[in-house]
Length: 184
Image (cartoon, rainbow, N blue to C red; front, side, top):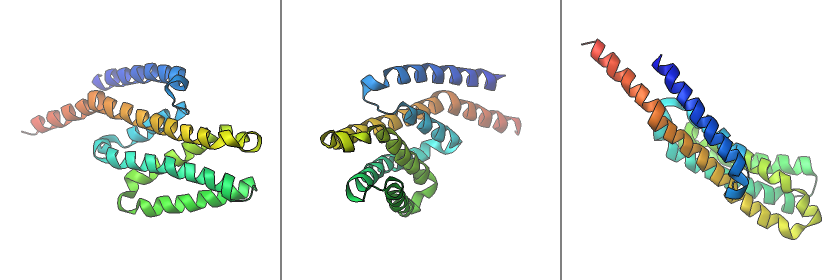
C-alpha cells in the first residue's frame, strides 16, 4: 500500500511540474519542452543506478546536443541540399562519434547522447525554412535552440534526480532495512 501511495505522489508531482514546464517553456528559453520529459523517462528507467550514472548521463546529453548542432551545420551548410541524404550522412558520422566517445561508459552516456542529438534536431527542424528564406537568422536560431535544448534536458534530469532522492530512494532504503531486520 505504501508503494501505491508514493507512486501516486510521484504521478501528481510529475503532472504538476509537466503542466508548468509546458506552459512556461517558451518564456524560459527551453525551446523543446518534450526534451525534459524524455530525459526524465530515461533517467527513471535507470532505477537504483541513477545517482551514480547521472554525471555520465549529463555529459552524454550535453555532448549529444552539441553533436546535433554540428550535424545541423554539416547537413545544412556543408553538404549539398539533398536533404534526406545529407541528414543521413551527418547522422551516421555523429552517431559513430557517439559510440566512440561513449565506449568507456556506454550504458550511461550513449542513451542520453542519442536523446540530446535527436531532441536538438527535432527542435531545430522547426527552423529549417530559415536557411532558404532568411539565412542570416538560421545560425543564431540554432544557437538559441542549442541552449534551450540543453536547459530542457538538464531540467528533466534534475527533476528525475530530485524525485528519486525524495520519493523513490527512501522507499528502497526502507525495503533494504525491512529485509535486513527480518533475517536477524
